[in-house]
Image (cartoon, rainbow, N blue to C red; front, side, top):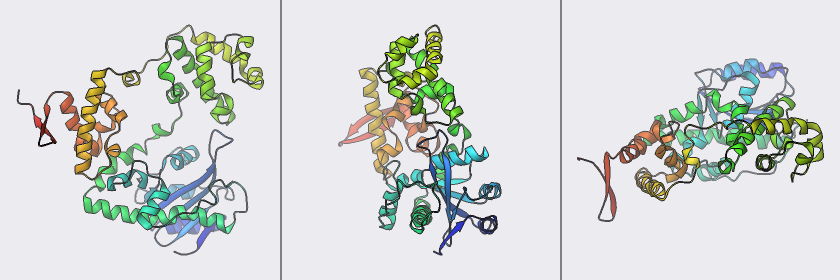
Length: 385
C-alpha cells in the first residue's frame, strides 16, 4: 500500500478523481462530529483501493461535487462497513445516496459472523489484526491533523479493502453473493435517511405503554422537537430528553406553573419553549392519536401467540444450522412477530430470507405445512388434508 494521499487542494482532488474513474470498486469511510449539532459535521473522507489510499479534507476544499459525481458512477462499487451514517452525510450534502454499494457489516453474517459485527471484529477475525483505539474520541474538525490521526483514519479503509476481497471470495464459493442485493438496495432507499417529524414518536422507547391522550401528546411533542432540532441544528436531547417527553405526556401540563413543576425540565426550556409546549399539549389532548396499521406486535401478546413464535423460532434455528448461519441473522424474535402480524415490511417476506425460511414460515402459519418430531429432529411436511 502506498503512502496516504492527503487531499486538501483542488489540484490534488482532480488527480484523485482521475484515479477513481479507473477503479471497479473503492472503500469509503467518513469522520464527522455531531455531539453539538443535529446534522453531522463532515470532517474527513477516506477512500482506498488495493493500490492506493487517500484522505480528503472537506474543510479545506471549496466543493466536492465532482468527486461525488464520480463516486456515484454505476460502474464503481462503493464498499462500506455500516454505511448508514456515511450515507446520511452524502444525502445531506448532495440529496442523493452513493450506489451501488457493498456493506461488509451486512455481508459478514452470511459467513457465520454474528449480526451487525463491528469493524474491529472483522479485522481481527479475518486478518488477525487488532486495531488501535487511540483516536476514537478525537475532534476531527481540528486542524492540522497529525500523521497518526491520518493513519488511524486510513486504517478504516485500508483493511476494509482486504476484508472486502476475502468476503467476496467466500460468498462466491458459497453461491451467496446475490443474496445480498435486496439488503443493499434498501440501504440506498432515500426514505431510510429522511427524518420526518410526524414519525419521530416511533423512536421513543416506552411509547407502547401510553394510551389515548398520552399517545397523542407524545406524537405532538416529538414532532415539535424534531422540527425545532432541525431548524436550530441542535441535538434532540438538548431540547427535551426522551424520558422528559414521556413525563410531559403523562402529566399533561397546560400552564407554565404546571410545566415548571415537572421533574427534569430546566428553567431555560420553560422560558424559551414553555408557552409553545403548553399549547401543543392542550391541543393534543383534544384529538385522537395517530394509529399504526401494523403496530399490533407492540402490544402484549397472548400465551398462544408466544407459543406460535416459539414454534417459528425453532424452524429458524433448524434452517440456520443447515446453512451455517447465526439464527439471529436469519430472523430475530421481532422479525417473527412482524411475520405473525402480517407486517408487509417484515424482512422474512423479501430477498434471500424469504427463500431460505420466510416462505416456509408463512406456509406454517397458514396451515399448509405441518411439524412433527422424528428421532429427535423436527420434520416439516405438507398438509395433505
